[in-house]
Image (cartoon, rainbow, N blue to C red; front, side):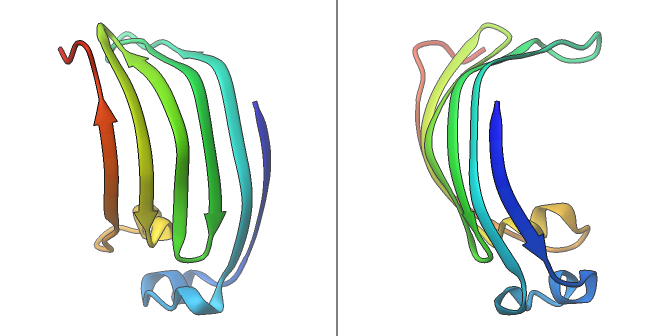
Length: 102
């Protein structure tokens, strides 16, 4: 796993959706990541590549397994920082391919 992400700004700017005042940039690469929990199906991330800026998280490539479901995806998340704030909203534009969704 590798990440080179920088962030500077205030929580008030995130809450008020003033993303132009935030400085977020960088890349995230994740390979062969396994997460297991008693409460949820096992998640295996074979490959994930993302790029970030204040208004967009670009999902270049995602290949993962959720329990028995395989997923390949590409797309973007508009206003990704809003995902961290209760009551805020983001927009997801995602192309998904799966051989088995369960």
